[in-house]
Image (cartoon, rainbow, N blue to C red; front, side, top):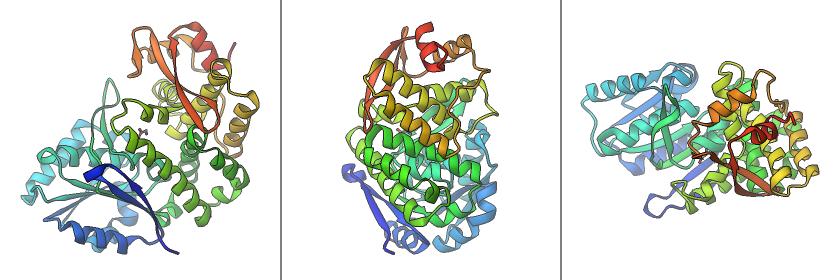
Length: 358
Ligand code: GLY
């Protein structure tokens, strides 16, 4: 089957997201056109074991850097180690290319490395997780964490190409695969009502990782994200709506760091955001229940964990990037397929709505 190409239209910085199986030929062709003087492949200890040699041989990467798998690698310390390794090769120049092979952590870290080396060298993303394919590899957000919070040090740096090879998803652990489906349901809720119906009909096939269903879902999600990014690259407006469900998700991740994967926290956050949408944005309660039921059918959590108290919720939300004074900007859906911003007072009423404990 032909590869699917989704353009991200950003003038001179436009690029394609290629979706297909066995994409190495497309990756080689793209690397040839770019004529890099050197290629730095960044991967992690899990993905590297499975796929680094394959990709390294395909694109003749000069240097492979493997960081430990896990969120802790999005740190200044690991980034500094990468800078040391890159400079030690003495092969870095403005025509160098960074290739990020891995999930969201590798994409964010290697993307930020590319954004900052010599004030910016080119980067190709080869996402290997479903979450990275549907969300983080597209749109140019790169970042590392600081002890104060997640993604607080970063830059917008668009890649020159993204290659989503479905073959990588075959080896993804089930829990990680399923958790990413929350971002897919989010896309349907904010921008694609037809996708929601498609997910309802194809729940089992998506869980079985059916390639045709995956290809369709990836193309829909990436096309939608590409259209949002093309309109608002730097998140001064519409791009913020991609954060539906993410405010509570970040609270859950901060309060209970070991308990939930990002996508699982997003699933809980989505249900809370829809509760808020019913109460304050006119969303039909039947539609909100439809989304919650779908998330549950995928095996995702939908209840706010009992251990999260109102005080802790308000305390963590007070340091949210979207807060201005006592007001926090929430993303809501007045109807499935549409999103808007709802400024909310940071108080007990908001906490009760979010926690569903009114
Ligand atoms: N993950 C949301 C965005 O890229 O804007």
